[in-house]
Length: 509
Ligand code: AMP
Image 1 (tube, rainbow, N blue to C red):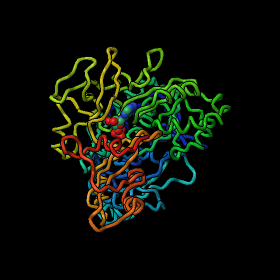
Image 2: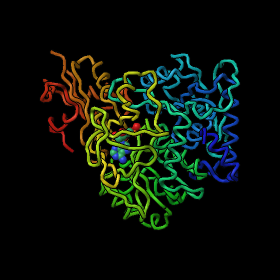
Image 3: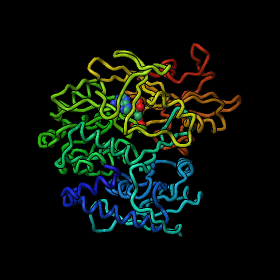
Image 4: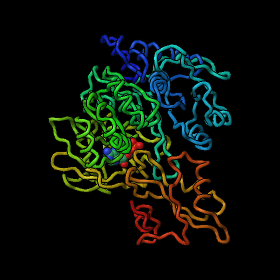
């Protein structure tokens, strides 16, 4: 595999042309031949409009087959930059400018603030038009204004950047993670090998397709295996069992909160579960409580495979293996693609059982954050990439994540940078100081909370501050709890400490 599109082209050579590639509930799927034709057409269209290899195309589309096919087809020619459609105007302005996007792709007729952001920045918009009759995922791109002159770049190559995503890091400014075709194809292969995907597999995708988990674990791993992926409009616990019954997937991958919401409706859907043909259930992006794993296995009568992923690794780093090998609840499994080790602060690798930072190296790992030498100097040590997660390896090579060295908040798999939220809160006229932190939550694991100190003589309620934040931050980043304090408690060293603040303030689960 050299590029994502090559993956698809090569499969057709192996006779998969007529087999289903991308589907949607209630519709006849697009075949591998159809997807390849779409990729070829998209290369030609983008090149005609001056967009070629390594130029960035921001994509703002709802979840569904067009988002999956746009990722593959646009990456065949250029660099894809999928953005969360839930962002507010200000967030779109930041991301589009930071990406230096050459174009923005939005669905025809979709009223997204991304349009206004692109117009402000002078970024041309291309509308994605899905034909009224046609396979799910089929589209044409129509520019809405004059585009640059034609380029003759042709298909993307292995070392070209296929995908850029922003990571919510510890620093206030989200960092750009470039992932080459080689990176994402390696990761897709690792996932395929871990869960033994074959052309007979059918994945039901419920993960958002602006996140590495959905793009690589559900879409590219399936296509790379010659298998198909059926794309839903996004997770919906009420609709899940209907899809399960209709699509008869052999597996799905999701974050723990989705598994919990599914389990909560399990009793009401016993007949559908009895008819289901799930071979496995995969969980990643946040820690899966062992009780949830046990309940899922009992309900669906198939193995639950917990994996450990991150954007910088093009998703998968470690995974529990399929039976007959052992799954260890509470562990994220064994190295599953890259090498995985534990490192101390000084950069020494620790022996088995040692507690330290999880580090990785391998073909799926990004070559480094873009234009960010400081971040790269901190992130790479002796050829290893530091994940910012703390963990330990047992004598059988199973990894347990024990904590986090980075300040990132993990809201059930959605990552939130506390500094980004601080900056918005600080713009509120009554706020003098703001510290955003993770508060324990029984379902999400962590939820966003903030402590603020008001300016003397000013007043604002918790509600005012949350409403203010909600205008400028996507829903998932808005603090669910804002505590107004006279002073923010400091750690033993007198420093502000986000970690442990929830406990100090008595905000338990
Ligand atoms: P993302 O870049 O959004 O995929 O987030 C990556 C981060 O999610 C990792 O660095 C971990 O902190 C966390 N994470 C991913 N998978 C797991 C897991 N199975 N258990 C615990 N934390 C996880």
